[in-house]
Amino acid sequence: MIRGRGQELVGMLFVITIFFVGLALTEATKTAGTVTPLISLPPAVLAFPALLLAAHVALRLGAEQADRLILPLGAFLSTMGLLTLNSLNLSFADQLIWIELGLIGAVGTVLVLRNPERLSEFKYLSGALGVALLLAPIFFGTVRGGSKLWLVVGGYSFQPAEPAKILLAIFLAAYLAEKKEVLSAGGRAFLGTTWPRARHFGPLIVTWLLSLSILILERDLGSSLIFFSLFLTMLYVATGRVAFIAVGLALFGAGAALAYRLFSHVAARIDVWSAPLPDDISGSVYQVAQSLFALEAGGLSGAGLGNGVLGRAISMPAVHTDFIFSALAEETGLLGAAAILIVYLLIFARGIHAALGAGNDFLALLAVGLATVTIIQAVVIIGGVIKAIPLTGVTLPLVSYGGSSVVSSFLMLGLLLAISRRA
Image 1: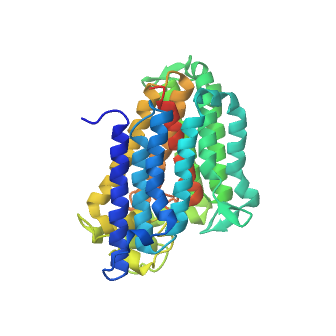
Image 2: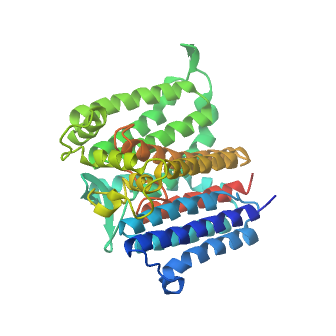
Image 3: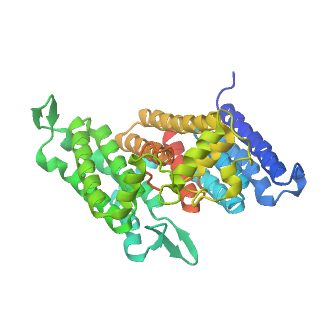
C-alpha cells in the first residue's frame, strides 16, 4: 500500500498522464490524425508537468504533514479545463500560464505560511480589503455580459470578487471565532428551537444588505449568492443555531423576490429557468438550450476530446467560462461529468478533514469557509448550466478560463494545505 506523500506522487503522475494523452487526442482530432511530437511542444506545455512534480518535491521536503490529496485533485480539475479549452481552440496558452502561476502560489503559501493562525491578527484589514474589492466595480468597473464585475488595471482585467472571497473568509473566520460564544448564548425557545436575541442578528442583516448591494449595483447575482452563502454557512458552523439558517433563508427569499420585480436581468434568468424550452431558442434561452443539447449529446461516455459539436462550432457565448462544464460533459460524457463532481466533493471533504484537526476555532472556521466557497461556486454554476437553478454566470473553480479565478482558487488550496498540517 502506498503511504505518505507517495499518494500525492501517484496522483500527480496520474494527472500528467491524463494531460499528455488528452493533449495528443485533441491535437490529433484538430490535425486529422497527426500527433504533435513531444519535443516540439511549447516550453509552457512541458513546464506544466515539471511544475506538478516540483510541487510534490517541495511539499515532501517542506510540508511533509500537509494533506496529500488536495493538490492532485486541484491539478486534475485544471487539467480537464485545459484539455477542454484546447479542444475549443480558446485561450489554452493563457490559461496554462495562469495555472502554473497558481501552482507556484499554492505551494508558496503552504511553505511560507508556517503559522496560519496568525492571519487572524489581520482580520479587520482583511475584511476592509475584501469589502473594498467587492464594491470596487460599482465605481471603477467595466460592464461585460450585462454585469459590472471587472476592473481594468494596466491593460489587464480581473474580477476583484475572486481574491475578495479569500479575504472575507479570513475575516469571517476570525470574527466568528471571537464572537461565537456571544452569538450562540441566550435566547428564547420557539418552534422547537432556541432563537438568539434580536441584536445578534445584526451581522446577518449587514451581510444581507451587502449582498443585495452587489446584486443591485453590479448586477452580479453569482458573487452575491456565494458571499451570502459563505457567511450563512460559517455562522451556522460557529454557533450551531438553526435559527440563523431560517432567518437567512427568509432574507434570501425576500431579496430574490424584490430583485425579480425590480431588475430585468434577474427576472430574465429566473424566467428562463422556470419555463420549458420554447420552439424558438434564438433569444435569451439560447445558451441554456445549447448547454442542455450538449449534455444530451455526450451520452454515457462522450463524443471524445475534440469531437464535441458545441466545441467545434464555438457558437455559444461564454462557452469557455460559464458553460465549460457543458462542453466538457459533451466530450467526456456522464462519466467525465460525474468525475468532475466527485473531485469537487473530495476537495470539500479534505477541507472538512483539515478543519476537524485544525486545533483552534479560527483555523477550523477558515478551512470550512474555503471548502464551502469552492463547493458552493461549483454547485451554483453547474446547477445553472443543467437548468436545475437559475443561471448565475460564475466560473467553475479551477476549470473555467480566467486568470483571477484560477490563481485565487489555487491560493485557497494552498491555505487548506497550510491548515491541514495541523491535522
